[in-house]
Length: 269
Image 1 (tube, rainbow, N blue to C red):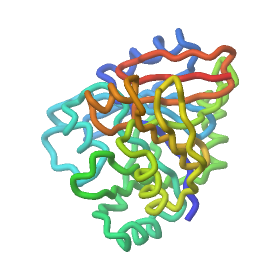
Image 2: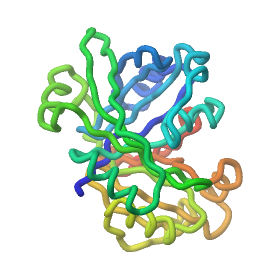
Image 3: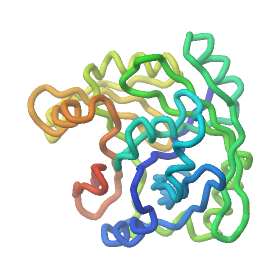
Image 4: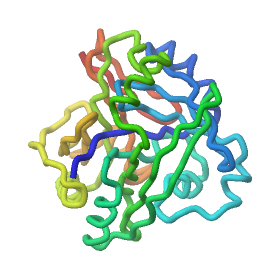
């Protein structure tokens, strides 16, 4: 089973306002399009095929008025009362049916795959499948699984031609996402078992005042941080519980960390 990081979802009230704010921080973003009939739309910021989706609603009543699949992204958004911040992330595959069987065999609740699509600003339609899985009462939700109808090479070429990929002002690389968790080792081991990812060596991050356990994933690693004292991670756990709270980049001119719409953005050289 081969998986790659696909995208991190950052829920925001007004996605179109994000474009200028990101530009001021040296990040390129473009309008993504509308999820017709589902009440949502997005803005996208690509780092090769790994990207951040800034998701918002154009019709909140439409979003809340339909029944959503268990463990789905929108179920999470609604359960979070449309609070701004990092919500969930997706991993990409070319064998979504095989992953569904693997997760079912491990006793998880699985829904999908379900077909999805979005209309781009130029009127073209992009389509994909989604798979949702999880454990009941698990405080940190598993990623959802995506399989695009087009292969990676075609998607990359198309996005380059549209000016979506390759437009970052700096040569930034998407390094991954950091999660605040109670037990980094236990969480990493569980996710490794479910997703077939390799566990790297743990280390202490003095800035976060945490033990960090890493799962290696093509396109962006997963960092699980457990506090060893007061600090950012301890505060996140106290206020929000286990969740993604930081997105990481490498290749910046200077190291910097800033907050944007309740999400923490961390850049390293």
